[in-house]
Image 1 (cartoon, rainbow, N blue to C red):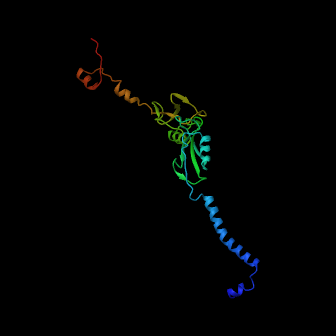
Image 2: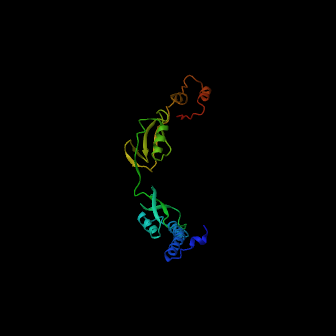
Image 3: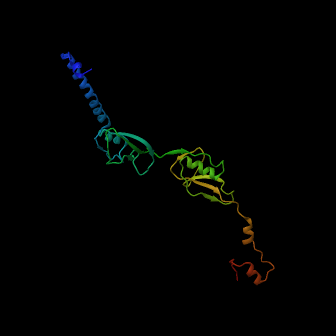
Length: 220
């Protein structure tokens, strides 16, 4: 059907109003969608991330909210040098330019020293098992303390600093532990060879050869 025939006899106002409305809707909908998309994604908008490190979590959240940013605490650690409950790290870093509504991730300092219950590592006896268990629970270890005369690598006890600690006791997790372990049985033959020397029946020259390296006090 020719375009001329389509419009023939349709010169009424209602017809043309409908045509105009259709054109408006066809053009307006894409424009409106693009506008809403830009508004939703904050297209072209840049906000500088403030520095909230050292601030309390409450103050950090307030500062970020004032700039149309959001805060989320993702981890907490213990730093005795920093104020309790303060922000230790943030991501993105201060000075970065982001869009409004961006989430800023925070790592904060614990309100107090982290505590944990000491497991029973003495009854198991194995040094390897004790080290693996304690490290898996977040405990830190110093060099082991050996006690001669006990089976080698047998766990005898646990110290935190100079204090003995025991299984089931709740202790600071970040203060290093020292495992007290056996250093091996003492070889008694060493004493027989080095200390229990018998010089009876030897002449002076033989005694000098047998006791070479030993110091003697001679009373005149």
